[in-house]
Length: 255
View 1 (tube, rainbow, N blue to C red):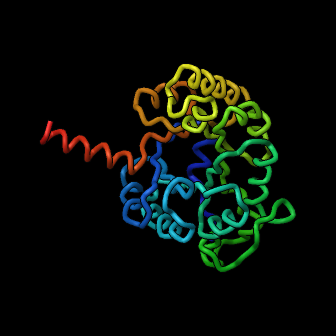
View 2 (cartoon, rainbow, N blue to C red):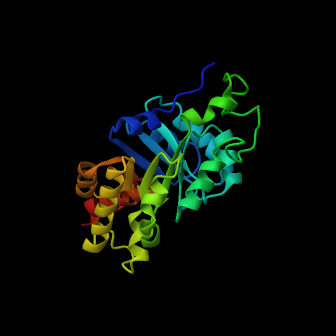
View 3 (cartoon, rainbow, N blue to C red):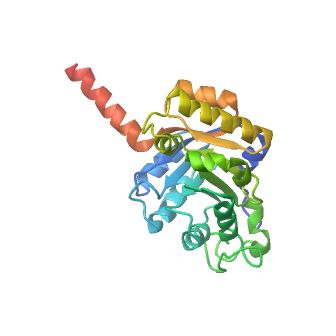
């Protein structure tokens, strides 16, 4: 069989805007529901949730029931062992957190590629190879793998051009929350100083022709960042949506 296509990567390369949701609640039920909600992608978050690596496979299988929704995985850290396991499970797109330099971006690239171009270990009977059925998987895997690196501190912003132009990096995702903290403005993602840094980063990435991603949970901010050039926009987090819905329901009855 042919190598499965990565629709998310293709859309990034074409510059098409894609809206996504963050999945932090483990188990197959929530990712299955999110995958069928009509968004372009769902991210399975192993960094800020109780998702263990072993929980990712059923989440990928659940999301995969919806052919129009792409699954993305954020590993807990930039670690080749974690990458190896996630890629073998069939993850095609990784969002790597807290990339601070071109050297760290290059390490992430190498962790996604087989030797001699990288350090990904080879295994044959994996979901990624469709259990040995994908023709020439080892030589073609990189064609459909997508690496998004997360730039989320003021120090990383200073290295943005070097990070973004690292060969093998497909997109850069700006993390407003940690960026605000690194600027001494914890949690103030809408602060003018934080927004100014984000907008400057967008301009740099557009000049470099590197696809841009960001999380913006306020609809007006999300729309503004899309207008500024974001093509990978996270507009909701499952646990946040649940908490807001519960609060609104309570207010309906109790005022």
